Length: 513
Image 1 (cartoon, helix red, strand yellow):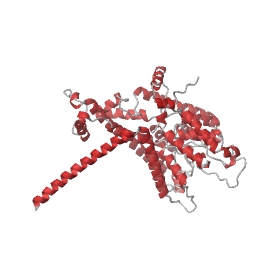
Image 2 (cartoon, rainbow, N blue to C red; image 1 turned 135 degrees about the horizontal axis):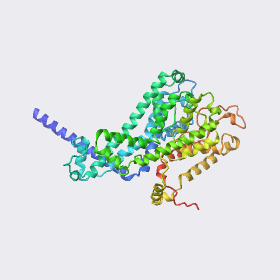
Image 3 (cartoon, one colour; image 1 turned 30 degrees about the horizontal axis):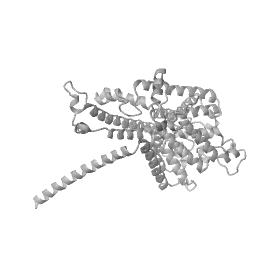
């Protein structure tokens, strides 16, 4: 009896091993099929749509007003919020303090899943799976399991024996994935801890959150993830305006804005350089020397990172000087001392490059600054100034784009079309309420959605030419006052802006002479 039981156990164990191998092979085949049948554009748009729909259903099912006086948000507004969080746009049609603590956690997850660093990490894993396994597949698996030492080879190491090109690239992509994931988690965890420590120690910030029924931990994690992802949502109705005197909090958030967007490539390269010096692994050295071959769009050369740093700080400096000249003595800066004004101005101009948090009411600042913000929001995050020779190389490479890229309109053309369509859907309001519904405010809203920023001039009942007794000011974006058709168009703009890299070279066949 014992013999038959032992034999049966061995056969069952063998069958389980065989089935697990078959299942793993089937999973890899399915992943390969998805990569073969679907282009990156369709994979990404499917990802954002699915996450947005799941986010909407989660917000709908967890809908639980904070009090009996709270307004229950409409389904369309919940879906709009889900799309806005997933595309890290922070365009809002309802006040943030309506959401319960559970709903704020759901929005936090959506912002994390939609952030550029996280989505690029997923893309990096797909790219690693596409590498051919050829003769070196067994050796690659050995490296994955740690059976082969992947440190710098000794003098008697034969690169050809393991098909070194495929081996080192596969292993380097794995190390790059670990570096990106570590960067993502460490920066946000450290930032959340620092913000939580600040709001716990600072009486004014702690009391403000307590009076509004916002948990300090939820606020800290929510705000840091939103800031790092460059979304711009804040759990308070007035965004960061209620914290314009908390200069320490603003200074904690400014690095999160830069580390998660415009300065991500330089700091990622610096992290890899540090890992290379500490670990002495061949993979990190390979990554630094072969940035293009890695196929990761956020990995730049040292020279490219240097130009990006100079350009990013140059844009901030120009905006800061203009903002201080025009707004230092304005009503928007009223009640702040010199130091608080300095930090608030710096925070505001840094946010114009795709983050979207505000410490001032944008409807009260100079139109000249609004136009400057529109330009900053339109520019891609990695816009940089290059010497003439390198500019010529970039233009030359762009001329070799495919037929589809040439036939498509330019991104600016699409934005003009979107503005025209919204002006059509809101034409009655533009006629009856021209101070609120003007072309500049609509254009800023569209460019803000396209840049996934979240800046908005909001709406003011005081600016109505024909005052309505039922009008009540609310702390949400200007788009919250639009028709459903206008909101639907802006949803398309947010998706278009989140995927704008796929049309970066569009419209080249159109020659303006």
